Length: 146
Ligand SMILES: O=C(CO)COP(=O)(O)O
Image 1: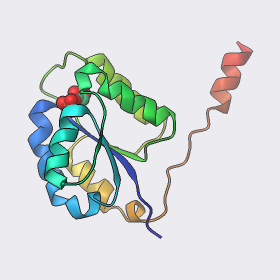
Image 2: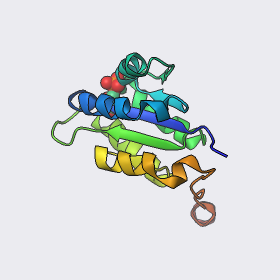
Image 3: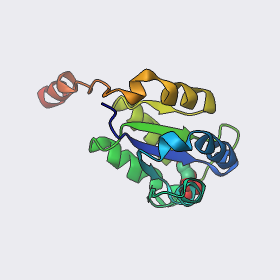
Image 4: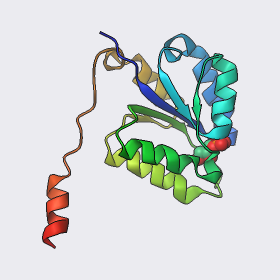
């Protein structure tokens, strides 16, 4: 039985046209999901999809951090983040932190169109699939034992 996925959609300014074009291609699929986004990206997606998107703060004002917190709380199933590989951002530390948390928590993540296509077209996307939850017990025991 297909389940609704909780998906974060984020793009830096130079990458927004590419993300919006990708979203337009996959809009039938995306409209059935629960969508989250950083502020400016989210407003643009709402127009493209004509359906609700939960908008956090704009990235430079803390939106990346809010999505990172959502990941830590177990509230996200997938992230599509078209970050800009050719331009530095004022909030690069936040960007790095978000990418790191997605890796830590084993969140399927696409940072370009090709990978986003793979994710959304994967049979796993429509199945009742959840990535394996990371086992932090060894890490936590080591910390307590130290
Ligand atoms: O900067 C961003 C992600 O790091 C995106 O923020 P906006 O969606 O507000 O442009």
